[in-house]
Figure 1 (spheres, rainbow, N blue to C red):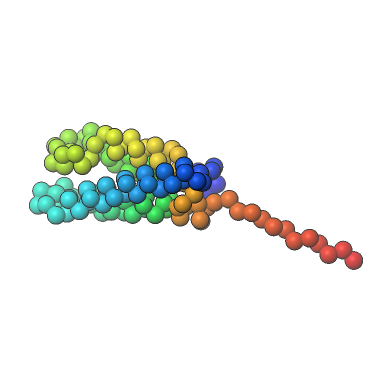
Figure 2 (tube, rainbow, N blue to C red):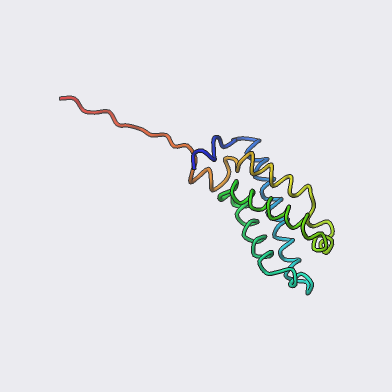
Length: 133
């Protein structure tokens, strides 16, 4: 995991990444709820709503951010390019800029305010001095 996460930005950059992750995660939650609440949305597939809920929750918490953001970007690109009729069903919900923002999150990382920083962040190892006799 250390290869994935080189740094965890602190301060204002970390807060900016937190706001960006929360905004995209909330947008994915809204897309999933729209997909489940409309009758044509259920025809699109329950897997799409489940994926959006899972990715949205993971992005908002900052858990496995780069992996989940990469999966989200690939799924969004497939959804956007291979099924344009589905993209037309959700006007304004799924757009190319969302895919670009999730790709940027995948490249930058989660930031210091995330579960990834808590679980996989750098640790300070303190070696106690050896008693000499």
